[in-house]
Image (cartoon, each protein chain N blue to C red):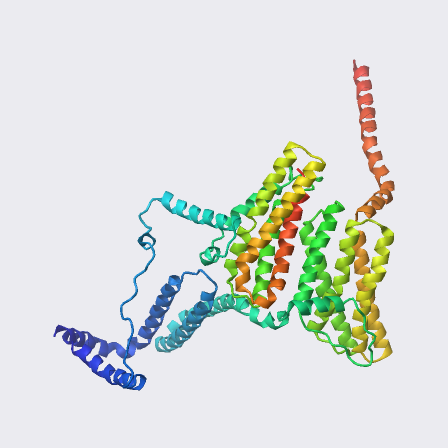
Length: 341
Length: 230
């Protein structure tokens, strides 16, 4: 019985000021519900990322609530007039900052969800990968009709990582010392830099030369082209014969380059364009293999030492001069001391 | 009370309609209304606020130790996947990096891998493998995979310990052969254990594609261990 009575009692003053405080109360309610949401968020165990989707949804809801609160704020500002305007402006700026920060945070969550976008490029079977690896060594002489390129990234990515591992091995065995940075960083930087950099460069050239190829296809083509590099480097880092390397360089490296050139030729129209595109790709691909071999190779390390031989004597001479000078200085001081005595 | 009655009256038509729609006359309604009690041991439910700190730490350590045992004797079990933690991987990773550290960090002739290098290889490699398995359509969460890959470094850490002991004792052809055998065996163990845990979460026709980066990852680590000379 007492329930309705008190409710009515509370309701009477409320009715009087409802017009004035309505907007403010809305605001408070908005804030209150947001707090409850936060508490709910803490409840999630966070044991897996599957919860993130839910969390993200909650954040969106919260955003909506905040938008309502902002609308309420605007009403509030109008009511208070000029005096409240400054406060409202400050609040709006703070609100915008808050919104921007929250957008950044939700973007970070989305990045993980966006893995799904990449999934089609990894949709392969083991047999397909094996066949493509073999095909990357077989140039096909079919120029009149555009050859098929699979837009797939699993094989290329794994080949690049394999190349990183092989390069790391080569660096270790050749005792390469890198002053700034680590071997690991250098190996990863070199391989990924080549793959991404040359792909985008050739893609740009292909765009200029009007070749029919997409960026993903270019990445896939160049990535599978690295299979020849992997074989060559793996063998020649372990067996140190220069003649063997040149045979592998021309044979296996040449085959994989020819394959890429054949594909590009079949997709380009016009002799000049074909020459520019394929010349650039072939030169870059073959020179990269040459660089990888000679930059981190045991035998060449010795040759470099002998080449650097003439550079050492000046250094030694400086080292030798110092005692001479110091002894001269010593002699001079001894003489002056003797004279003084 | 009046308000409650009002609310009840307001709600009644809604639910009444719902009941009529969803349940037809002929089918008897059956089911368990009682909430099933937790069948597990009661102590897991008990509050951990007023227990001694030692108990808390010991419980976590025991969980880590149990997972080590799972890796040492890999059998089909989801214990490593169900409640993942990153303590074990952290301990193993730090141990490996410390033991692989060259003798002096500031000398220019230092040939051993640096602490940071080992650390980065392990975590970067594990993240790449995890992302790869996600991209190939695996149904495993990010940290579960990191946990399994990290715990499966255990055999390689043991291999490094053995290698260091062998190198302390004597160096020569025998030591070379012993180290080669130990590292190869432990490499096989690591790869098999991690595939045993991770293979179930992958589509069956793509297991080879998932195993290849795992193979490469453990191969690089075991190669680093094999070529290490203090």
